[in-house]
Length: 484
Image (cartoon, rainbow, N blue to C red; front, side, top):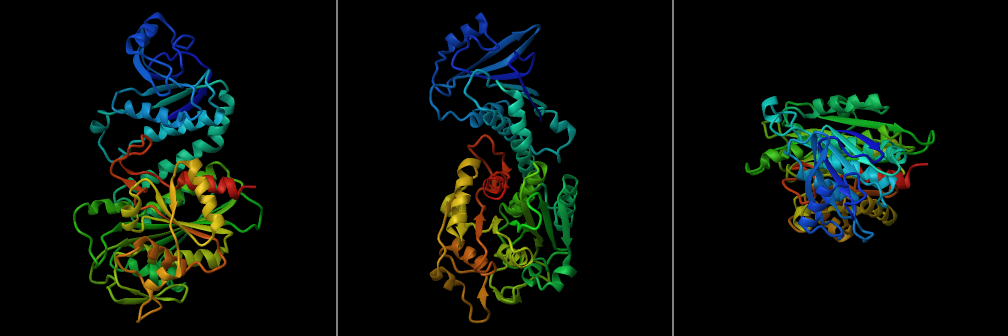
């Protein structure tokens, strides 16, 4: 969708949304539109709206007028997104949203453009042209506002790149597993060097030499080679320690020998949603030229159940030297993250580190798909993330970490086991990860199993399945706490 910011003028075709408490004085003021407003009972209550057609020369514009109301809590982004979502499948390809004459700031206008893009998102690249033509995509979006230059600057410098990153994350999650598997995924990430990221790919030989047996064990049953990809953005002070983002990238998760039920297993192509969030965030940071040093690390594996696959009861030695009894091969994401986190801490000594993973079904039981579970060893970092959550729309809820939960991971055969039992499953998973972080690094874990992939949402900005959750949150956190 091509986005432009313009001064107020009536659209000549397509669909238009006017956010205003009165029809008179708007770009579409006419006797016919006023009559339609009166007939619909349109009032100046926030969110009240009516739709009609306004003539523009020989063409008619599909017009919706929405009341701004007097409330100072009017959500421009969400209101615009709802309107765009309502037009999906309408055949309209050109959209205009009027914010002129309202109290919308340049940032509001930029967020409206982002919300509209997210609401208009469709993953259809694997459909034939015949199917695509039945529901044409939106091609152009004009935002009419009082200060288009300032709005464009806000969009170009922040909200546009963040939207690009979130859409990239959605595309990665939505791709089928025969397209996005570890090596293919790594190749997609490598393309981001065109935006200034440095990208390093570690293959199995290199990871084995580093002792990453926890990560490598997950991929033993797959003929596809596991990968680790390190992305670096050096936009801050030279030599300053980076912030670090780490993502779980299980490109397909059968559960391994601890095989998952067949029903809905196809959704396990999305078990790399944490890595997609990191990749999307790094893409956004590079595109908006963030003034920060940030490292993104993703462990990419495919968990399959063949004759060489890891067995329940196997004991592996992680890169940290700690041994793990693998009691359940479907608790594999934490094994991938164990080595990725240790690598990040020892290699880059980050000022702070956040990992994201579609880690546990237990978090969905606790929070549904509205909030991601937040776990942290540092109160200041947790507070930063919750503040970024409030302003980014990616919602989080903090859970406890405590020694009593940690004991649930004790194993008589190894330093630990990879499951803690049925109770407190999300917490014991986080306790497991904490063992590979060390005591000196501020760290947070986000369990996005419910928010990273959804099969239906009331939020008009979210599509079916891959949401790109985490990209906005991570960018907001970096902007607020790590940019100079």
